[in-house]
Image (cartoon, rainbow, N blue to C red; front, side, top):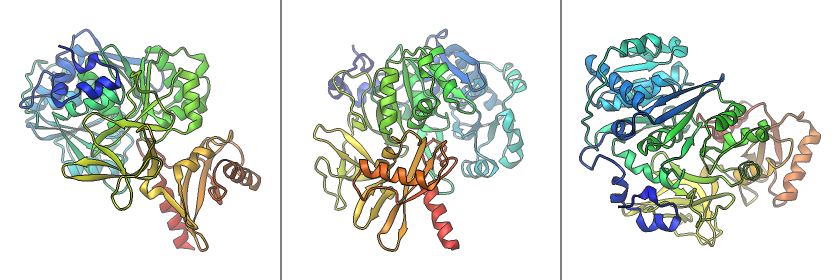
Amino acid sequence: MPKLTDYTSYADAQRHCTKDALWALFDGDRAALNIAHECLDRHPRERLAVRVALAEGGAESYSFGELADWSGRFANYLKARGIAPGERVALMVEPSLHFYLALYGAMKAGCVAVPLFTLFGPDGLRLRVDDCAPKLLLLAPEKAELAAAAGTEVVIADDDFLAELAGYDSAIAPATAARDMAMYQYTSGTTRELPDAVRHRHQSVVTVMLAALYGTGLRPGDRLMIPSSTAWGHGLWHGTLSPHALGITTASYAGKFDPERLMAALEEFEITNLSAAATHYRMMKNAGGAERHRFRIEKLSFTGEPMDSDTDRWVERTFGQLARSFYGTTEVGVLLTSYPGAEDLPAKPGALGKPVPGQQVEVHDARGRPCPPGQVGEIVVRRGDGWFPTKDLGQIDEDGYFFHGGRADDVIISAGWTMGAVEIEDTLLKHPDVREAAAIGVPDEVRGQVVKAFIVSPRPGDDGFVGELQRFAQERLSRHEYPRQVAFVSELPKTPAGKVNRKILRDREAAARAET
């Protein structure tokens, strides 16, 4: 009987995708399911599971069989230490053998895995450890100085640790219910000092398959690379768990990001399916040298924030196709996708895509009414008897494609005109001397707000350059829609997931005004 992975078209996705069809992709059922078993144990042992591109050069590779054995040893190690099912096991490790054995081994043992971003400092680490109260924290050797700040038992993920694990039996029979807790994931949001941990059950791997099939277009035989951190949803769920559940070989990136190293890895690993943040594509464009590599990319996708049009064109020239967006939130999952690999759904520049099967998504105005095509409103998703707000603005076109309009709090209202930060930034990024751009609204006595742009450029930021950028924006946007203030900075603040953090820019401006 055909499975969902046998279909590639948009029409077939709408026709065949059901909850039962998603469950049919797994060994487990609604009563009993274990993520580690689905991702490792049931696949051919000799098949390559992971390749890790190391920032300093070189690579590491692990088969499904190796990861199955090492994760089994770690599960038995946890049991021997008296760490019980349901208790938390945190890991602050870059993609490596240590990361994968701990991630999957914790879930094999029935424990709750808690991946943590490796760039957290002592305060960020302690906040999360205090929140989730892990029984054990696996810490990378280069982070050993954080052990004292952790406030829990720490094990250093070094060669001595592997030698100790080697003495444990690799055999273990996972025995988790589908609704048992499997993982805590801390989002990269910045609206609170400590964003809530999103709690995932083992059955979440079934739900995320919607994004795998229709967001990244995964199919058996793909070689997928997602260079995002494995602590965040993109690198963890889309780049690790869902492809492994399908027996697909993945590639990760470990260490300080280098766009030239990424391009070399795409060639070296013969990657056929690349999904990255818009920032990753932009950094590859700015680095230059793509013409020196031979790529085998068949499917491209991105998420996290809109792609500026200049980078969009570079991607199409470099890889022979547009990168297709998929959109969602950590809280509600993936809502809109562009169905990579679906020949019957053309890619549209700037589009977020269309709803995944089973999701009802609309754009509503301030009164909660559906917006007609072309009108900007808030993107909302149906949940039960009501509509759940995403706090993102958007619009639809006549063909039913959704387009992003920025965060609701990124709207700038100046002298009665409503402007979007994303559109202004996209225009500024077309200037040949602009590497990065961010736009926010700042108070103005006459207009209420005016646009202030923050520019990263190799060119000196003098008055002449300011005027040039203002004229450049005026000529391409409405006459009022340009940055009346321009600041040149060495870098833009970003969230750990790589998105430009306009909130920090707004907060800095507010603090500076308070001091004057």
